[in-house]
Image 1 (tube, helix red, strand yellow):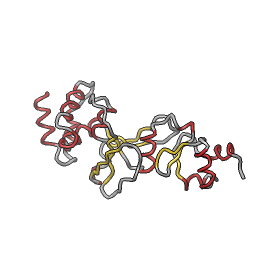
Image 2 (cartoon, helix red, strand yellow):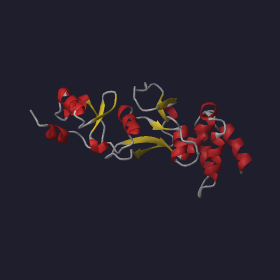
Image 3 (cartoon, rainbow, N blue to C red):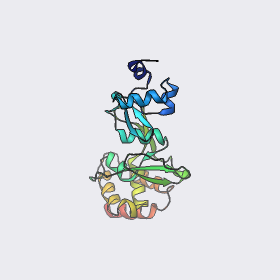
Image 4 (spheres, helix red, strand yellow):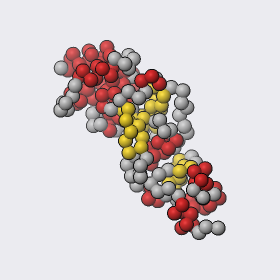
Length: 200
């Protein structure tokens, strides 16, 4: 039987892994549980573990990225990340394309379902802080503003206005780019245009 240090060295560094993935790396379930019980690895969610060097990561995003690879930071969480609103959301707003079932995770997440046809509009990948290559989706400032107007009942009626006002102060802000995105994302064009007419 491998010694604990050798088992620990077999596991991926700076990334989350499941029981089946640990087995793939040569660490059987019983050994994995022994490593957990001895404090050599940490359980960060149902069936999800990380080695100590991964504990500096944003564990909520790490768990979400591992269990839902298409998960994308959206709405208030994306707006806060981009510095467009002052609010710090109490849970992470994550979007999935329609038809995907949100996974069970321990992180505080509010799941949103976005249309498959427009899911990738304004979407990019960003590294999860403190990991060695794990990435999660995030919507651009422009897409996030458009969504705030489209989903203003859930995002907050003033949220879109605050974000738009702050975005317009940024160098290189192009209202035409916002309207281009709004033209392909349903139910956002009219409210966004009216807000721009007031603020410009």
